[in-house]
Amino acid sequence: MRYYDLINQFLLMIVMMFFIFICLCAAATTAVVLMLKKNNERHRQQLADYEQHLPVLTVDLNALPIDTEDQLTESEPAFNSKPETVITAPATLAATHWKDQVRSFRDAGSYEEAIVAADPAWPQWLYYEQVAITIRAAVREHKKGAPAQTEYWLANLYKVAAQASLVHDKPHSPDSDPQEPLSSREQLNNVELPYAGIGVDKLRLLTKTDKKQMQELWGDPNQHVTAFEWLQQQN
Image (cartoon, rainbow, N blue to C red; front, side, top):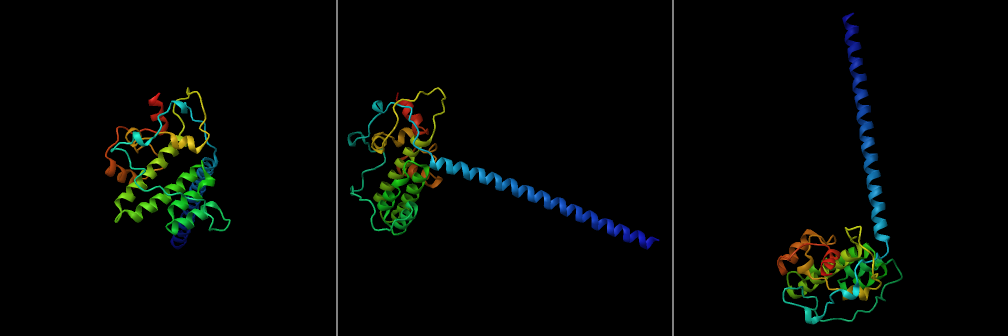
């Protein structure tokens, strides 16, 4: 009789272990499903951000400070430290997706051409991401042997990040009244976005390495705000 009791206990233990195993499997499956769902929603949101059109800029462009050579100071990034080169639209690649063209030029070290190849995607956030990746590659190439060109590319990276902030970062105040829309890249390029006034911490496009390199070159800015917040301060 005792022998049968031992067998029954053993079988009961096996059933309990099997039940626990089934519960663990169900919990793991639920966790995986929830994670995949969350990642899918995040991916859909990113795609929506990438495909969005240029938003209305709620500031009066006519009242904004214009970036001219006379206004540059020694404390500002040297955007024009490299001789200006006339860049024509890439014509050496077959008709492929613009991202493939950007990658091909970037891998070949043709950074200016890679930036021009990204033009079809402007003003999407994806455009700014690809341009930033290209500029970082240029910074890495020149970092050891060409400090002047390194600063030139970092200054352009900062300008791209500030413009991306101006285009894509929405104002915090719901009471802002839209005024003149920012309708062209020429208008965007004419808006002064100084390093000292905007800083780096609120520019989403910049990485920690980008920020560290910029602060080592140009020192600490006066504040850290989005480009839109800085423009609001000028009114």
